[in-house]
Image 1 (spheres, one colour):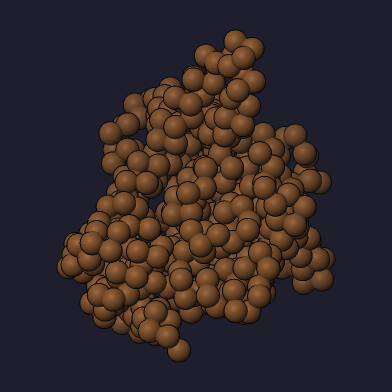
Image 2: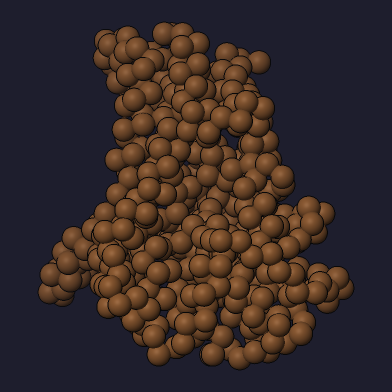
Length: 482
């Protein structure tokens, strides 16, 4: 085994051991792993990385290799945080404001009204899928579980289906669609345009969601469960919110705008840039310039946050909404996520500096792997890390440090597919070391065995069906859709 692979093993064991056995926070475990691997990496490997992967001169490579490990870790943390910091903060504000203003509830009720009681599971899945883009899954589940209980009490059936429908929709976008942290970091490290990542993530996510939902229907038909109650203080807050009359909720258009406007701007910019010459020739250059400006990822998400704050300010649920307190609570949660993803990016950078990308590339070449097989390697690499330590986000940012170098080496495939393969690989298989396992199990009132048969299998099927979809898209559309 070559030294870069040994250093990779040391880093992964440090992260997994720190989180599972020493009960360290993920940020601290990633920091220790980055520092340890950085200290153990010899100068010769650092010089090789800068010369062969980055293409700098030997003299410049020696200067870069002389940097101490603390500086290299800090620079990696800064680079990643610069890419994702504002985006995660704004996404957190959008999510909080949608929850507190009743906008998220309006979206769910609109889906339910459109599809009717018979299609209530589909309504829960679809609305959860959409809300999972700006709202972190744990918070989303707190909002949705009272609605699942209310529907089960009303229909006298389908409780487990309602719960699994929420998971099938809400958890899917967590690993595939920015601005959630994992896909945001992966897209940034691979240089994937966010518009393409959003479109690809939604398309693959719909396939994964459909497969998971099919299992949910089968399980509910063969293993029905009665309504369970297990309210706690935080859930009671959203239980009261779920009783809000429709006339106090914002309009559907107002509720959707903080989500759809950023998505339209980001995807629109990516799409219009493909036709820039045609647009300029036909006098539509001004439209292109507008989308280039507003479609900047930081500006687009900031516009979404401003729309969400405006919605909260006009909310009828509270006579005097405290915008300052809402932003404060949003940023407190976002700060932890930024720290974890930023240090995950730093750890990935330190791994790449061991010349791991070259070693992985040489291994792939020696095995004569095709481009599709490389996606499978990325998928299972991420899955192993996810199973070992529990966090999908940590698995994704660690995996990108392992396979990210393949892009610079040239893998004969669009990097968006590599990003999506990593996202799908972060799904299988969540178990008792995953926080989502306990959130869903405890709030739904399931035993550990029941949670594994429902939550764990649904999430695993999302990853399996999504992974198959990625391979299919990569085969039929190797240069992506646009």
